[in-house]
Each structure stands twice: as C-alpha cells, then as structure tokens.
Image (tube, chains in turn red, blue, yellow):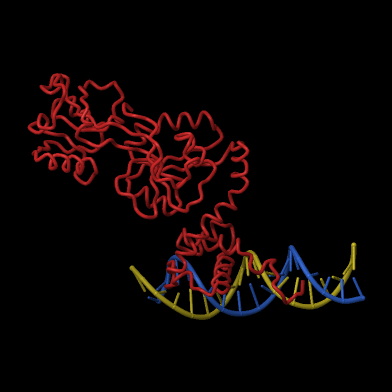
Length: 321
DNA sequence: TGAGCTTTTACACCTTCCTC
DNA sequence: GAGGAAGGTGTAAAAGCTCA
C-alpha cells in the first residue's frame, strides 16, 4: 500500500469520530461529551471537525457556547447512534447471544401506575434470574419517558400508549379490562349486567382531566349520548380507590390497579370501554442493550421472533392484573 | 463585562509503512 | 528486524464567540 493512497489507520477512524459526534449530540455539548468519553474537549472537537470535513457536511450549528444538530447532523445521528452503541456493547451482546449476560445496568422509564401494579412482579423475576444486573427505574410521566427514551437516558419504557409518535414503536404485551368500581354497599354493586346508563347518574371519581382515562370516559359517554358527572378529580389510582371505598363516588379504572385486597365491588365494563394494553416502548432504530433484550424477552418470549419493530405482537395476558 | 463554552495552535507521543 | 518518515491522536494554553 502506497503512503499517499487510502490509508485507513487513524485517518478515517470513523468509530472514534462517530462516538465523539454521538456523545456531543446526546449531551448537547462538546465539553460534556469529552467528559463522558474521558478525553479532552479539543480532542472531541477535532474528531467532530474531521468527521464534518470527511463527510463534507456541517453536523452542528455552533452558536457561541451552544451547539445544535443540523438536519444533516440529525440524519447522521439516527444512522450512527445504533452503530456506535452496538460496537461499544459488542462484548455484552456477544455474551448475551451466548447466554452469559451477568452484569450491567438496565434503565427503564415507567409511569407511576405501571411501576406500582405491573413492574413489581416483572422486576422481581428479572432480579431473581439476573442478580448481577442493576435495575434503574425512573418514575416519569409519559411525555418525560419519551424524552428520556429519545435522549438515550433509558433503555426502554414500559407503559400504555394511545397515540404513538413516528419515531417511537409501541409493542403491547399485556392487556387489562376496564371495570367499574363502587363501594360494597352501593346500589350498583350487585347489579348485573351493568349498563352505561346505570352509571350515568352517579358521580364519578376520575384521574385529572389531562390524562387519557378522562378522555376515554368522555368519548364513550358521548358515543352513547349519555351525560356523566365528575364529582371528584384525584391523581393516582390508589387515591381513586381509597375515595371510592369511602363512598365519595364510583370510578372507571383498568383492572391492572386491582390487587384483590380492596373493599370494593368490581363490575366489568368491557362492553363499553376498550381494553387497556401495556407493553414495551422503544425508540425506532435504537440499539437495544443485551440487558434490555433480556427484559423484553422475559415479558414476551416471542417478541424478537416477530421482529423487534413488529407493531402488533400477540397479547400475552388477559385481565385481572 | 465576565462566565462559559468552542476553536485554534503548538507540541508530544504513538502507530504504521517504507527502506535498507 | 531496525530505523526513519509520515501522519493520526492526544493535551495544554490561548484566542474567539455568545449570552446574560
């Protein structure tokens, strides 16, 4: 090989360049990227400049102390991030393929209800099967969970989604039935079958208006030309259940939140309200760490046989929580 | 105007290739 | 295989830029 020809050592060391670029894109700062990569700041800056020069594009818009991805930068990040993550996690991925993942970290974002009702048994099983893997649970709202997923701050999110953004893939795995809960001595407690018009006159206790539960209740009552009345707005299903027990109203909840220990009458409403699904929420194109793959496989052993981007995997579990 | 950040510059070290 | 040359990668220090 002649010296002036296409030497590939150092020059065009794409991996280092892409690692620096991805890290800067994620942190929004060359300095923070350097800190994260245990390099000096100029080193990272030069890697990014070399990448821009060799690709003949501007990847970051520099405005003083702030850097922002350009459209070209965003495109490259979508392509590069899974590659860099894949190579950096090669050893763990290889170990996973050989069934030897025994350490590492798994970061999961989930909403409060998911953390309270769905995750405990999953986390317990995962921790038992993989005691060396440290699990990090982030209690977040749906919006914050998506932001963390997009920023690669978590490996995956677990929860329920109604509207799925284009860059996100949602894979429902568990489904739960909608139910009416009333105090034990409520007039509706022994009424079977329950009809929507039976519910209409009674005051409802619902989660806050901006949450999906209220939206679904509103839609269903309107579809049946029925009125409904909310007497109490309460955040969190534990709170809702408590106030229903106290006789302050009735509520429409998803059976996931029922443990069987409540002093409540539970009546099916699946004739009127849609079932609620819970599952894995992933960022499209994101590299899945071996730990994340293990967790997803534990939730749904057939998940990867259907292809990771399958949009409608078969449901695993029906109602009851 | 200073803080906080990035870029530029100079230099040392390391890796690879070529020549002998 | 050893030594020299070329070039890539790293750091420290200085300069430059933007924003509050």
